[in-house]
Image (tube, rainbow, N blue to C red; front, side, top):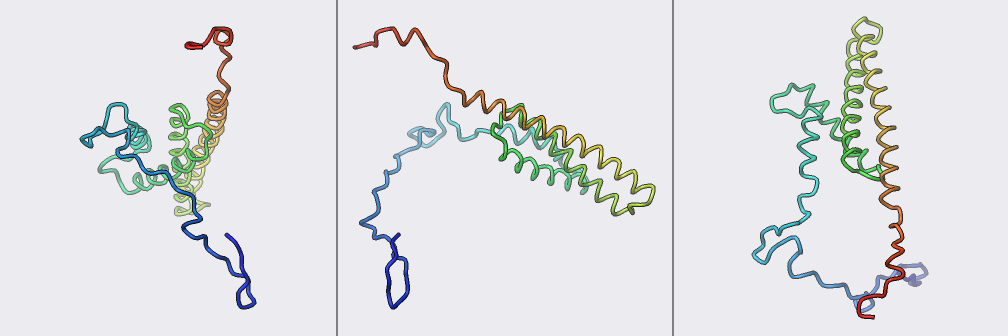
Length: 175
């Protein structure tokens, strides 16, 4: 984008369409689809589908659950989605730890709310605070463990491929 002066003011000028680079055209049919439009074998379109049901079960998203359980499950789902985006690697072992961490965090928040509702200085409020603290401690331990494992898995995944010494000395085919 260039700036030109017009009527004493600096104004941006938009590029002309002739100045824009040509974009590659889209493929006729995605590789994940067959010629008839159905999904082809080995497609990756449903990747992660199985995790959704596992997460739903772990977080307590069950048909007919009471309102409090639904609220905790919804909060846990939001926490899970946010934390999984922050991880350098999100393999199955990391996602499992994050599911547990999200549930513990949501339960900690629930019991903190209950303590406030019951009265922080009442016997019921103090009991709710103790439960909130236990769930919070567990969530803290799980997030530290998940980050540690995720970092280690990411470093292994990003490590350079091992040197194939034999391939260095073998003549190339067709050379």
